[in-house]
Length: 434
Image (cartoon, rainbow, N blue to C red; front, side, top):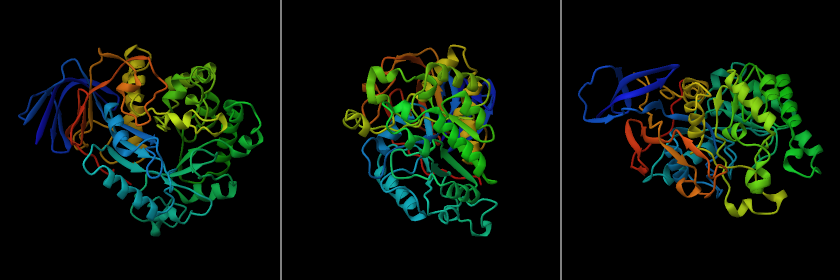
C-alpha cells in the first residue's frame, strides 16, 4: 500500500517546508514537490505535518499497577501525536533482569494483541546488586566487558537516586559509580535520598524535596560519572540545568506549565516527584529551554487513580498524567510565537530518537518509519478529562484552551488515529541503531 500526504507544511530536522510525502508500506519513500501515484491520498492543505513524537519518559504502569494500562496508554499517546514511548521500569515486578524485561514485553504484546498499540521500548531498572545484568540487556559501556554485550533490548539503564513510586533506589555513591561505568547510557531520576530523608519532618511535599535535593544528586553524578552517557530526567530549575550541562537534559510539560500553587487548588493531584516549583523557577526553566539548554521534552506520564490521589497526604503517590497533552501544550506556545516550531520538533521528536538510538524514528525523511502527525493549527480545544483517554480519568490541565491537537496520527505507514477515532493499526518494539 502507498499513501501520499500532499500540500502540507512539513516540519523536520530544523526545516519548515511545503512538501508532499510519499509513503510505501511502513516507510517514507520520498519528500517531493510532485504528486506521484499512490493508493490513497490525504490532502493536508493548511495543516502542519510533523514526525510522530517520541516520548522517552512514560509510566504505563504494567505489570502490577492500576493507574494506566497499555491499551488506554496507547490511545492517549496516539491522540496526543505520540507514536513511540519508552516505558520506565518501576512496575511490579520491576524490570531489573533480562528475564523480567522480556516477560514485560510479552505481557504488553499479549495485552494489546487485538488493540491499538504505539511503538514502544523499555528502560531497564538499576538496583544495588544487578550491575552484571547491564551487559545482558545490551547496554554495556566501553569500560565494561564489550565482548559480553548482548543484543540491545533496553533503551537505557534507569537509576532512581531518590525514592519514588516502586522499590528502586540507588543512593550508595560506590554503586552509582559502578553503574555509570558499566552502562553506556544511563537515565537518572536526580534527587538525593539523603537530603530527602533529612527533611522528612517538613510540613509539605515541596519542603521535603527541595531544589537542594536535585542539585546534590547532580553533583554526585558529576563525581561518579564514567565514559557512558547520562540523561537527567525532569529538571525543574535553571540551576539544575546549568549544573547538568555535561549531560543530556530533560524537562517535563508540568514543570514548564504548572507551579506549586496548583497544590492549593487540586491538592495531592498536583503531587509529583520532583515537586512543582515556584513561578520564578518555572520562568527560569522556560528561559533555559528558549536558550537551547534543554535537549528533550519527556511527559513523565505517571498516572494514579482518583482513589489513590484522594488518600491521606503522606501516603498519596506522586505522579500525574501527561502523554496526551504534551504536544498540544508545546505547540500552542509555538503557534503563539513564543518558541520556534523547529525547536519543539527537535526536543520532542529528533533528539529523543537520536539520544536513545531509535532506528527510523523522529524524522520525516526517505527511509525513515512513516510515523507522521497532521495538525490543524487553527483548531482550538478545551482540555477536559472526559475527552481524554487516560484510564485514571483526570488531568491537571482541566479547562485550559490549546491549539495544536492532532487530526491524524499515522503509525508505521497506517492511519491509527483519525478525527477522534482509532483504527486497528499496530506499532511494535523499537529497533536500536547501536
